[in-house]
Length: 189
Image (cartoon, rainbow, N blue to C red):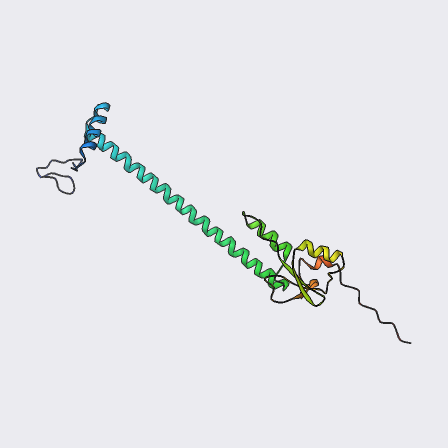
C-alpha cells in the first residue's frame, strides 16, 4: 500500500494516486457517455477535466487578485487627490479670508467632478436694513448694474461665518466695480 509520498512497500513507485469518490448515477452516466463519445477511458476524462478546472480556477484567482489590487491602488490615488484638493481649498480660504470664492471654487469642483454641476450659490444681501435673498450671481450682477448693489453692500452665503461688504468677498467684488473715490480735503486758507 502506498504511503503519503506515493511509494509502495515492495520498492515499487507509483506516480499517481487513485482517488475514489461517490457521484450520482446521473453524473456517472454522463461521464461514461462523454468518455465513450471521445473514445477515452472515463478516468482519463475525469483527470483531464479536473486539471483544466484547477488551471482555470488558478488563472481566474490570479486575475481577480490583480484586479482587486488595481482597484485598491485606484481608490488610494483617488483618496490622495481628494485630500490634496481639500487642503488646497482650505489654504485658499485661509489666504483670502473668505469662505465663498464663487468662480474659482465652482470651477475647481466642476474639474474634479464627473457628475452634475453643483447647485448655484444662494447669495443674501442687506438692502434698506433688511436681508434679501437668496439671489443667484446673475441676479446680483443685475442689482449692481441697476446701482442697487454696491461695494459696501453686506453679502452672505452658506459657508461664510458672517456678513461682509461685497468688496471683500471674492467672486462678488468684481460685480460692484471699484469703490468710490474718497472726497478730497480742500486746503484751508
